[in-house]
Image (cartoon, rainbow, N blue to C red):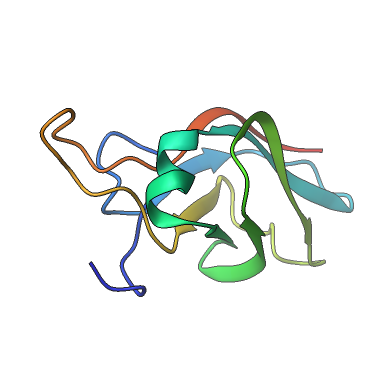
Length: 116
């Protein structure tokens, strides 16, 4: 698996996870609350998450320790939310590959995605 592989938080971690959200017309931040399992960081090390809204990158953040209620936040540039609904995409730079114990690629466990 190369470092340019796309990994999402959905059922198939090999593709980005997309959400359609309906934001209001003000200054917003994009927030994702998730768990990063220790088994993932133990095996693959730190992960970098990238967020895009309507195809434009709005932020990237690296997480190097496991834990619950982790937060990803990115400021949404003015004018980016003119398309309704907005397509929001999250991508991980790597994930735990399928193995004997679990046939899925494993990345993060998403609890919530919101504009705030």
